[in-house]
Image (cartoon, rainbow, N blue to C red; front, side, top):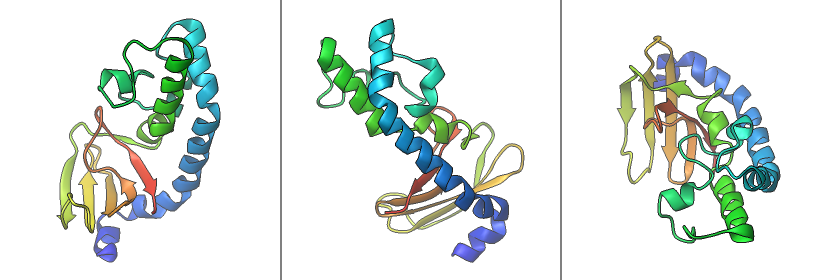
Length: 165
């Protein structure tokens, strides 16, 4: 199946291994910077730190756990507990802004041109998406591993995925 995907999206398949170390580096930076980002948000009284947005999720604020009603994220949290919730939220989705922004693609006008397997449960699911520009991106999901670009856009973006295990 890999070779069929390679024939359909050769540039994204070839460039992907170059982008992965960059994504991993920014992810590690997100973990390291999470206490600082949460601290800046607490100091400014804002649940957004736009100049550091690449280090957390692109589709929610630093209070995303509260906004989405996730377990363990208390809406009435203040002080240290709120800071910790924001650190936790960043670490839950580290560098999503980066992998959806500079390493991702707009989903506007994109179409699935190839898919094989079942998306859920993801045993072996290959996709190729043609973007509005004509550029093609690939995606592969196998159990807990995910490579390429996410086939289902989040907040209008196909984010790059690099979770090999």
